[in-house]
Amino acid sequence: MRPPPYPFRSEAARAEYLAFYDARAARWPVPSRTRMVSTSFGETFVRESGPSDGRPLVLLPGMSASSLMWETLVAPLAERHRTIAVDSVFDVGRSTPSREASSAAELAQWVDEVLAGLALEGVDLVGMSYGSFITAHVALRRPERLRRSVWLAPAAVAARLSWLWVVGALASGLSPSLHRRFTEWMFADAVKTPEGRRIAEELIVDTQVMIRCYERRPIVTPSTMSDAELGAIRVPSLLLVGEHETVGSAPEAVERVRAVAPAVQAELVSGAGHDLPIARRDEVLARVLAFLDA
Image (cartoon, rainbow, N blue to C red; front, side, top):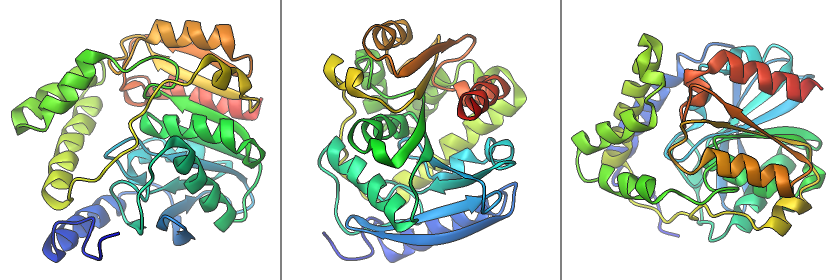
C-alpha cells in the first residue's frame, strides 16, 4: 500500500476534504461518539448515536459516500437503537486504508473485523446501494454476526447492473455537467421536492470535492449473486427497491429473490428509484423499523 497522503492526491487535498467533511459532520442531528476500529484493511472510522445499551444497528454507506449520508435518517433510527454509521475504509471519509479489498469475500471480512473490534454479535446491518452489496455478502458469509439485515436499493446482488446505468456512471466522470445530468436522472423522484433537490445538489458538490481530493482507487465491482448463494442466506433480511430503479431492474430483483431466497423479504417501493431513502423517506423508515422490530 502506498504511504500517506494516499488515498488523497496531496496533503493539501487531504486537509481540504477533511475540513469539508467536518463541516458536514457538524450538522449530525443527534449526539454522537466517534472512534477508530483497527482492521487488517486499515483504521475504520465509526460514528455512534443513540442509547449505548440499545440494540446495535450498523449502517453501511453507498459508493462515493461516507457515514454522513445517513444524516437524514439517523434520528428516528437512533431513538431506540445504538446506531453505528461506518466510513468505508475503501471509500471516502475519515477511515484510513492500509490495503484494498479484491473480492466480495474480503469486503465481508472487513465488516466482520469491524464488528469484532466493536465486540458486537447479533447486530442489525443496513446497507445502501454498494453498502447493500456488502451487506448481502456479510449475511451470506458471516451469518453468525447478524440478527437481521436490510438491503436498500442494492447495487447488483439480485439483478444485473443496467448497461444504461454503467454508461451513465462512466460518462458522469467526464464533466460536471454530465455528472449533474446523471445525478438528476438517478434522483428523478427526489428532486421533485425542495428537500430532495437540496440533497441532490449536496451530493453533486460532495462528488466534485471527492474527485478533486481523492486519487482513483480500485473497487470490487458489484455483481449478482447466484441462485445458490441467495438461497443459502439464512439471516432474516429485507430488500427494498424503488420501482424506478436505474441501477438494475427492480421487478427482476424482487421476482428473483422471492423465487430463490426464502429468508429475504423483497418489496417494491412506488414513486422512487435509487433515491428511495430520500423520495420515500418516511415509508422506508417505517418499513425498516417494522422489520427490525418484528
